[in-house]
Image 1 (cartoon, rainbow, N blue to C red):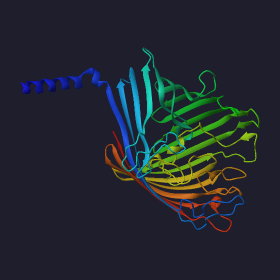
Image 2 (image 1 turned 120 degrees about the horizontal axis):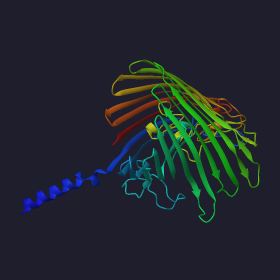
Image 3 (image 1 turned 30 degrees about the horizontal axis):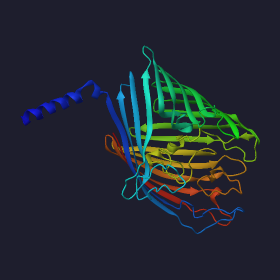
Image 4 (image 1 turned 135 degrees about the horizontal axis):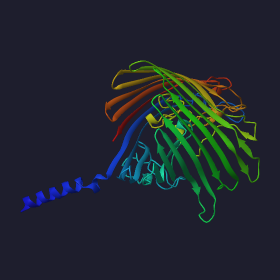
Length: 444
């Protein structure tokens, strides 16, 4: 009798798994573990007093850590008709970090899963949205907590609650979007919303796109904020050449209840040219410029801005930098700069694939400051603000991506940084610095 019950149970299980209902489920995600070792993060300076005097000039800094994160998504339905998606995340957690004990100033910190013992309540809801195709139309509606990404690596990349409408007329794609950043008073209209429209066309030899977005922030008691952005992007691939460019202008105004109003007048441009020498070998030249404005001009804000909390900068250094700019291939590692406004850089790159499972990138970057009457690179750095210098520094690096399996990679990189004049003390030049990083990544 037991034998027949086992066979019956197995049959029922197979039928359940093979049923149309079970076939509607799908899952995906990734996990990564990264290491970082950085020497001379402070460039042996340690900060400045109000009069510009260097502090802790003999301090030698070394930083080392191991960090981990994962993401896991569940989908029920069919993207061609209707589906529901929920995404979970265990945010970046340093191995050996102190457990959160609810006594700090942060009410709900992210991460904190790498404690000794590991039992922490830090599983996050990253995405939760409904998506459906309007019957007999090319229109797709996505409503809920989702990712908004526009303007490439220069403008917006953020998870937010909102609505996306996408119309596909191949090779054209039109998207209308709205996300809500703030609404703390539900009985009034004290909200912070961003609205936008994007268009793109992709062909074999070229692609082109444009977008416009407007922010209506009336949630702040001290000012109303109304910046807007317009951007154009494109690429052209004739023969062994590949050209791409991205330009965004930031306009609008901020109106204070009491105080001096100002107009946004910033812009950013990035241009890249690549020549494929042969199989697995290419050389590239890139130029980037983002306005920093004049620190003494209170009527105009020339510093190029992005939407609040945008994570577009998090991958700004991908294939380019591991010291100066953030690199998401190594879990957002960087040493000096968490955004990319107020500076310019010129880059030369050589890419080489000696074997099918090895990708190498060799980079040289020369980085400058674009702000008048002050150094914009003061964020997360020790740049002096009592003088105005143009040379931020130079970075030399090599980045390797090793393919272990089809969906598993081990990234390794080494970078060396030569700090420029903005980091020099009155009687001492800043010391050179270097960093070494790795990241083991598995996608499923």
